[in-house]
Structures are given as structure tokens and as C-alpha cells.
Length: 348
Image (cartoon, rainbow, N blue to C red; front, side):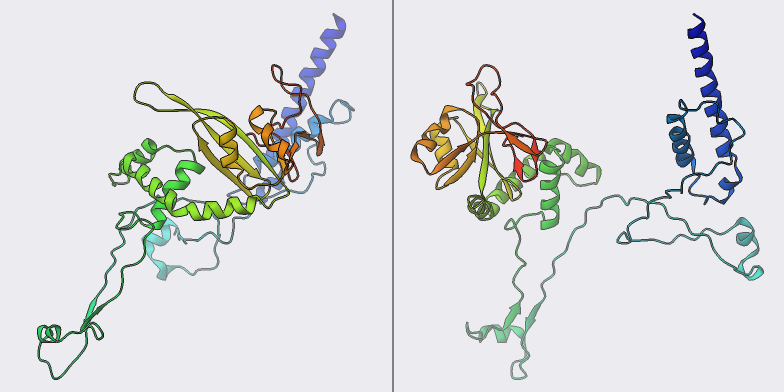
């Protein structure tokens, strides 16, 4: 009991000591030199916590009066990137505003910076294509020129319309790219995008956004195929599938998404209604090399040909080593969702 009371007193003394140290730091003369926008509270608290970590070694060596002990160098505030645009706002004292600049002499200035954000805004780009008619002194009016027009020498010339990702589409490249990033990078579905654009004054339905993305999928298909061809040239590939539910009229149907990873190069996705050998053949048509996959039987026919080498491992701590399969499946090594260096598993 005596030991417990002594420990409690020591703990209470440590708390009081820490409180006095914090108070001394916050009121020390050094704090008067801190810039107005940096009050130094974070550094003071950090220093106090660092000192508290070693308080148990020599609890009697420090006291409330030891507030002038040497402190570690101040870390300071991280500088704002120079690439960010800057807007200068000049704030004048009330006296100068009342009496006018002519009554004062400017002797210097104090500059501080804060980060602000401008609200995102939509803009309508009006594309104007002027029409021109060649000058001809022998013809009085443009109508007369048009009557004498030939395909080789057109009378009226006009610039061709700029190319758009979606022909005759309402959205320009910037808006289309923004909706794609929001949906697949920021995980923002169409209904949320619909509400966001409504607050900005643009009535844009989720059906329209989905229609845009469907048309853009056809546009980027050649690029995706080129990525797949480049992935097949990598030292090895990682592949896996996950089941998904697809909406249907009466009952949701079970389908599968496949992910194909070329570590350090590409991550590609494919869809199939069934998880079978035919889906694997469509996904890996023409591939020869090492394949990191689980022990499912849909891959077995690939290994019998000899052109695809079966690879399965657990990646952890920078070392690839065999590991037992999860319970309920064959005792065969399989990839897990971890990565080390250029090695990566096929799971998401």
C-alpha cells in the first residue's frame, strides 16, 4: 500500500512538473520572437513530450525552474510550393484609412501567407468560326460570287469544327476528364456528381454521365489494347478474379471482374459472365511466361501446355517464400494482397 501511494505521488509530481515546464515554455522570452502566423505551440508541446519520455530515468534532476535549458532547433513551418498562384491582398491600418496615405510614410511591410481555395466553376466555351468570302472587284455581291462558285475554288471559307472526344457532345475534354476522375479515382458515383453539378447551376443527370463514359470507353479501347500488349512483355503477370452482382430484370446475376497486373507498368480489368477456363483464355490469349495466380482449377490447362509457368508465393518483408493456402482450399501456395519492391499480388 505504501508503495502504491508513493507511485501515485510520483505520478502526480510528474504531471505537475510537466505542466510547469509547458507553462514556462509558453511564457519564455524566446516566444516573443515567433512570427504572428506561427505561435510555436506545436513545437513547445512536442519538446515537452520528448522530455517526458525520459523523465523516468532521473526524475529528480529537473524542476519547475529549469525552463531555460537548451532546446532543439525549431523545425519551422513548411514552405508553400512556389508553383501555386499567388494573389496579393494589402491590409491598411485604420489610421491610414481615415487620414489618407499622404499623411504617412511607408517604411516596410510584414508579409504572411495562407492557403485559400477558389470554388470550382463551370464555363461555357463559345466556339466561333467566322465565314470569309474572297474579294473580287468584278463581282458586286456575295450572291453573285456564290453563283459562280466551283469545287476547286470555293467562294466562302470557314475553319473546320474542333475535334471533340464525343461527336456533337455537350461536354468538352476537361469536363469529361473530371467526371472520369471523380467516378473511378475519387469513388464518387453518378448520383453524387449529379448533385454537385446541380449546386453549381448545371442540370446534369447521372444517365448522361454514364452515357458519356460508355462512349469514351470505345474511344480509349485502342489505348487499353496497347497497354495489354505491353503488359504481356513484362517478366511476369499477376491475375485474379472477384465475383460481382449484375442487375437483371428479375434477379441479380453473378458475374466476375478480372484484374491483370503487370507490376510497375499496368493494371487492367476484364469482365466475364462466368469464372471458367474460357474466360481465362480470353484474358490471357497469347501470353507466355510466368503467371502468379491462386490454385483454382480454371488455370490448370495453361500449365499443361508448358508456355505458362505456374508461380505462387507470399510476399512479405522483401522476401518471397511459399506459404500455405487458406483453409478449405488445396494446400498450395497462393498470392496474398501485399507487395515488396517490384513483386505484387493480384488481389485488390
